[in-house]
Length: 150
Image 1: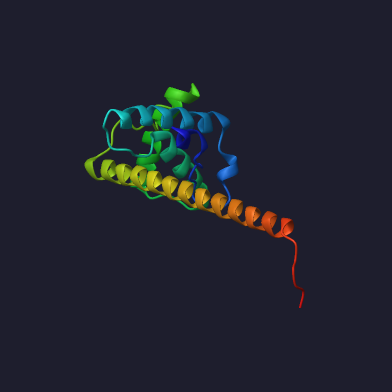
Image 2 (image 1 turned 30 degrees about the vertical axis):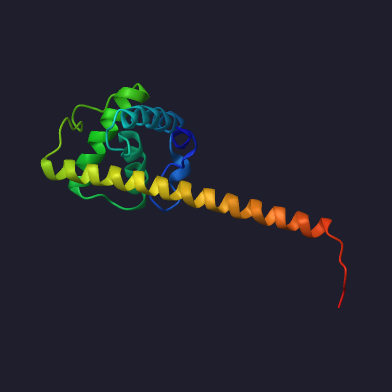
């Protein structure tokens, strides 16, 4: 549950992560909470459509997407925008369904995003614990008198 609120948003490397709209960041948090409820009921944990949308949003700025990934991006962005952003994708570029290969690629992307999110959470927890131990050790050294100086 805490991870849904505190986990980082995984974006494509290249410096475009700070351009994510605020409504998309909120949508990611809300979809993560919904996914947690599904996980409690026994479903396989995975990334969300909003997370995939954010990742592909930043990837599209860093490098051109091929036609399959454009279709996937338009599909998830259409679902995300209409549900959370209060916007509709124009009908001439809207994608209502994906072929089997594109569906597998989207599911693979969502699974990868979920795993990266978990890895980042574990890394942060370890770094926090290490920093706390170092601070405690530093505090003990300051409190203990030096008996011998060489």
